[in-house]
Image: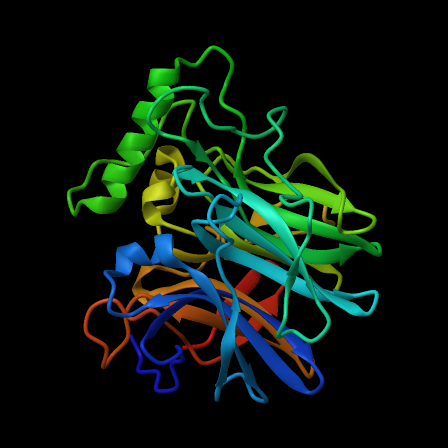
Length: 351
């Protein structure tokens, strides 16, 4: 693992999942943050959105916290999770993930609007998007685990229409016992919390991670549609991004090695934690893995939630880091940009 000296996080804070927007000759970085004196795993329950600006994507000037959990009793009163934004019709639009106290892992997506990237107004009819049970897993009506993956919206324009790609899971197969669903989630938590090798997930509940697809004409009312991408190979596809390069279409996302479906992990020689990418001739697919196995930055990179940024015709990649030289334990900081090479089915990030 190479040394990276210009890591960024606000003073006394962790920084992880993030999104970027260029405006007025500056880059605006929005990222999840939580107090560094808390345990790293507690950060998810305490997350708010930090803000910083830079002219070069390396030297960041912290700004005041941009967005925090809503007031007690609101649908978003627990924490704010990953989102994205763009400038459209003269305003800045933010889609963000949020959770309610007592809702465990039940996730919904809200909207906020700004005129200056500093002051954000929540939409009065939030949340604007929830998982549609026709295509996506919704939480069991009973049981101890209220789990509904519906997060990390990636906002873009497709043929001029506001479009969102969303981390989700396909619907639970009909006839599946509820206790079996709960058991599958308990095994998933165990895989991520123990150093023991418990094996990759398998069976009909495994590999249901997908990217949901939704579109709007006004940013206020959203039509949730069938998945754009459902490879059947991972349990979750986090922090997605979509872009076009030289006429070819690309999807990137991050996933954990514990989320690999067993047969796919065996086929490519084992799961990898980090950035993955797929390519296609059109947005409709079919999508094929870049580099043969889809892996761009694997476990050894210690990188996650990588974002692709185009500057002066050159693609660059920014990530946040689990670990880095000179940082004991969990790092929780955002890395410097690195050059990206894209050549058809090949996508690589320089060390």
